[in-house]
Image (cartoon, rainbow, N blue to C red):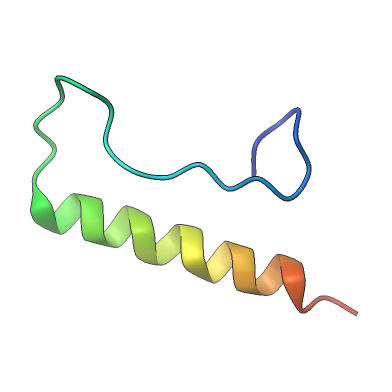
Amino acid sequence: MHIDVEGLFPSGEGAGYAGGIVSAAIDGERCAESAVKYTTKK
């Protein structure tokens, strides 16, 4: 989660970086998992 904006989960590759499709997919999956955990906490 963003350190200053609660509930904001930035994801993706920055411009000019060649991290690759697999690492971008893994980053997106981790971000989605964190967002789900955040939105379903009790």
